[in-house]
Length: 216
Image (cartoon, rainbow, N blue to C red):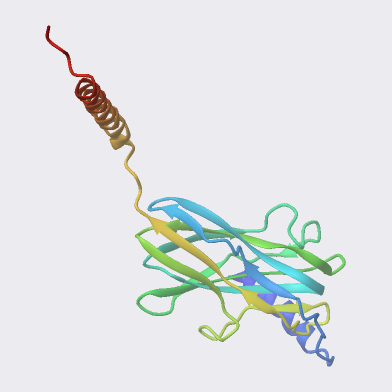
């Protein structure tokens, strides 16, 4: 919590400077992995939160809304090679909270202390979820306020950077019990043998019909 307070103090100082709004490129996008991820019940998965075509990025915050009856948020981290790698970032512990009976959100963010702001495309963070029940859940990057918080990008002078979002999607499927694999393989083998035997019998019957024996 003290780390979050420190980060907020840094941002409050930056935002108090009277400056104009940053003109971001039209292609600046904060995104969660676009491909649908499919996992089993009880299986963990990691998704990347990325930014594309950004200029002068100094801090970011991602608010991800998900279905907590399908997924459990288990953590987030800054992986090697992230946009602030080697720049001494402030990375507070992620927070999560329920919104209603089915939805929760997690808040993840980072801000630089030293180094040059980031320009270009890269990974903001990795986020971890666990499948807890069958179903589908969107991973929604919220631009609209969620419990008073929104996803955001800010430049080195504390100005908001305009951007679009691209959500992710996770499908949780039934876990296939490993103890059923061997019996099913045996059953499949038996069925194949029976079908093969019947086919040979049918071929033999057809052959005998086409070439009936002649008695002398």
